[in-house]
Length: 225
Image 1 (tube, rainbow, N blue to C red):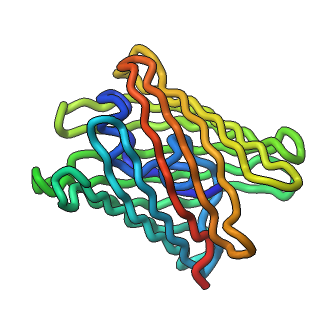
Image 2 (image 1 turned 90 degrees about the vertical axis):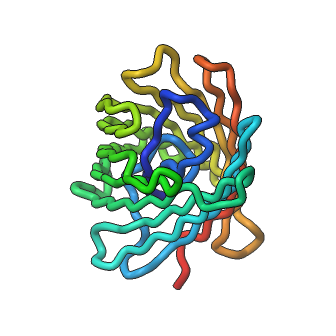
């Protein structure tokens, strides 16, 4: 899974969450501590529907220096037929070991076109460690500032990825923040497309506070070169 996180506003529910790129492979809510391979780029795109809204996102990312990467997610609102948001994110791996956990730090901002302003800023710290050969745990802790509601709040999440010897990668996750009373639960699967580097993502997220569900279909190209 890969890789970087955009501003995630869980307080307003999945109808809003559907419009913003997220972590851990683009649309997943919880980030991992990996980045794009050195001197390479990746490309992700996905479609998310959370009744009554739907959004499409393209998210190119590149690692220019080896230890960090930049991502530029662009969100298209399918109802209004316009680009609604443009994000910019930076992520750096600050510690890793061959046999132990990895730690990264990411930060970014979101530009909302209709308001013509940067409306959200975030910092997130993902920690990933392998429990057994096929199971990895990801923990997130961070802070986000929302200019629309003029509030700053803590964010957190936990995810587990199960990667069998053969077959797809399975993902389970939970995310929340200080503004909410109940968390969002999500799950997904990432499977290879034939013999290519491309993968197909299927995701489902349920907001237990608002009783809303979002469905996502995406494609990930982890290496362009």
